[in-house]
Image (tube, rainbow, N blue to C red; front, top):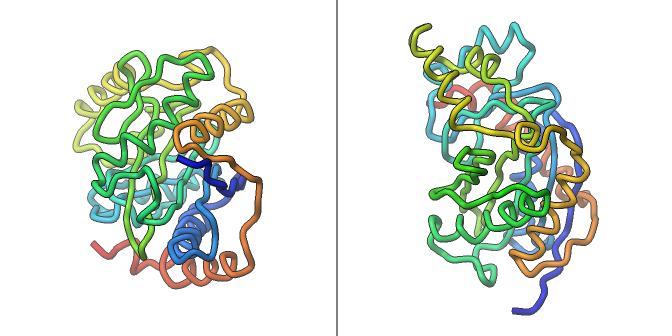
Length: 256
């Protein structure tokens, strides 16, 4: 397979509404060929909780706790469960590519194995014994370090996910709804046993080194060369429009 030229976007910290609108805007432009396949890295400021497309926000999120802690709440267009995006505890990536991209299976479950391989190879470059854990997780020594979600819309594929640099289970279960205190204690113990982070495994985190390793991992997995770029004016305008019409609207958040 011939090496593909992809665009690399290093976006740093943005709020939840901008982050999700930008991912969708890029997906739409990539899908119709107005932009190349794109790998984007970003973080969240302030911290946020995102829920999957099919979830009910009032069932999943303690909205009062989020207000109290200054945490944004947003609905994604991808499926999956509720995720706490810690402003200091994770790096998020997104991949936007055409639906018929070479080497990417049409079957969603199979495509996770291909696209997540970039994360596996990248984390291994950091010295972590990373493996793909179907359906869509990455594990290190049997503990989850990355969760991923995907949607296929507009003729394109959007996959985004988190890489845990650190983890704060107590805050996470303050923001996500848990039926009772006893179950909360059990969940906290479960997270400690089943979830890990780069800090836990390596003792320290260098975010720039993590991003560089992940870039190299995706380059190897996708046979891609990443060329640093910026959002086009079309994408920036589309993202603003999508944010105002969808992600920033109460009707979108409470649609289920």
